[in-house]
Length: 41
Image (cartoon, rainbow, N blue to C red; front, side, top):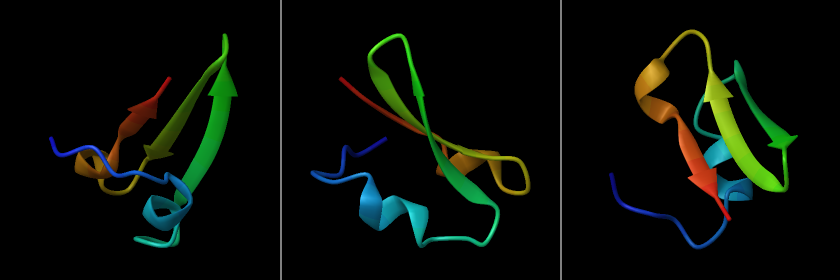
């Protein structure tokens, strides 16, 4: 998967996408469409 330079732009892909911080990493999780998952850090 291509890495975006900002995960904020990934959040607007879908209504159900949310940005979550876990253990110092930033994740985008999307329950409806799992291919929108992303990780940063």
